[in-house]
Length: 424
Image (cartoon, rainbow, N blue to C red; front, side, top):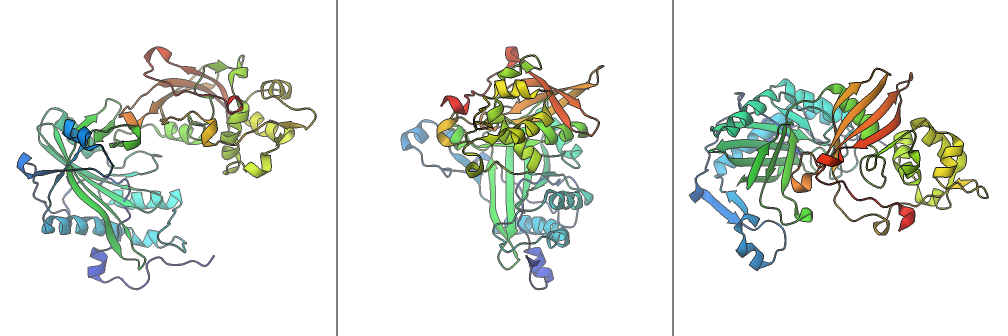
């Protein structure tokens, strides 16, 4: 494919100012003075707040009964909006040379490599701003000022900060947080490039949040308006406090790819003496993805997975014999295959799923690792739905093998339901 510059033509100073709008989950700090960081007057008195329906069809009687279901927006002047756009576009302009390296035929469907996103984040961080990757695969850069602001706000003090977020779709998001008497006011901008390579604002708003929390774990959570149900969720989550780099490495390698969807590896207690509890046929999807970077093709495996292929992939991640696997995963000797069913809407439990976060690990005397994982559940605003410990062994080649999983049932709020696809 021919390399195409998504920014044709030469940017003038004016067009650079009205430049980039690729912010998805961004972080930047207004505590740091800069040429583009002009003070924007806040309008946070109750009289300035206009209540508007959010973008969800709702029973009018329900809205009337509880006004918290409505988004509380705050008017911004034209001058305020122009200053915000200038601030965001200036940051985006500093990253333009990195973004120009991408190859794309469609600027409306940009998918950036993670290394490109991380270089953009490093560029923004180098200018002193707080910024985080929208993929939740690393620590917030320059998090200290955001953390200090939130600690002040928890005590009821007036405080202000901001941060940027960038995601793989090239969307830049900017959040300005203002706290007054423990109330949170959020100014938000998302931006991206148009088909001519010029920036335009996708969305700009200022609201009074319904509720907010800075958890002990270091998650900033706010709810734009009271969420009616999980499908109409209004929670925003950002991790502020950093985790050890080893936690990110372990999570990326062997926790996140498995997660809590379509398999029960982390949803039941097991060890090497009770591996029959694992539904290996359903787990194959995740292991195949880890091994190949692709999802299993339904057409290729609709008659089952060839025995040797199944055994090689599973055997790379578990200390298990072929005889054990054939017994646990219903090997068919006549066809030489293991049964497999693709995930569909009809063969999975209908529920919202949390995502895993490795929060700590312990190096055991026998050389194994005990990895503490907590399930983050955005739809209910919980930074820990349940906790489990995954035991791993790191091989000499750097690969990990799974040795067990143990759930903290006593302190679990809820563990997602699971049913093997063969049982539907």
